[in-house]
Length: 297
Image (cartoon, rainbow, N blue to C red; front, side, top):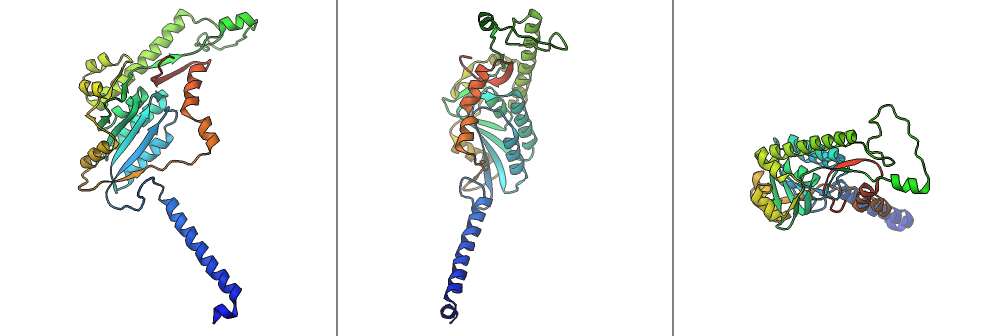
């Protein structure tokens, strides 16, 4: 027999076959980059998680496009657990949601908090489900900086600035702000705030006057938000998935597919964490603006 005549070669072939099977199996698992039941077939609800500060829109937009183009995905749930963040990223995600809803139903499930930019994004979807105690709303804009002028005066440091126009260093942390600069920044805030209001009016199909009466930066519980029309239903993530599946025409059991999360090192996670981003916004000496719920800032 071959195994007796060539025992080492036989062992090598058997070992190679086992390794090949393991590699193929792991490759299949990696290809199906989903959190839950990757081998489920049929009609599904795609779930995109939006956690922490909104500082980048790229991944969420990519997931929306992928689910939009996948015929097996009949509806999408965006799980929002965020106090908001940058104006630009929030607006970009909102726009991609509005581009998606003519093709797929999109529902928001709110976690512990969906405020400011988090609510901005939620407002663009077909429906919003919140927990009774979800921190909701904070429809507003914040802009600010830390001024170090008095500290510099005490330690004897004198900043030297060359600029091409008198407003080029508006919001400088090393000098007193002029009244003209205050008016410019307030006008900027008012403009961005109006954009927020109109996004809610468009997405929620609400009267503009009513939205403006609620858009003073205050927060609501999910239960309060429902009474004002900012939220459609009270419930958890599973309730949102069931509703999205029904809206997408799925009958019977609803399968779910989670958008794949990129693997990052522990050090990168710490460096990119929401805590760091939040601290940076508060301590940054330069001007920042955002759709952000940040009590105490």
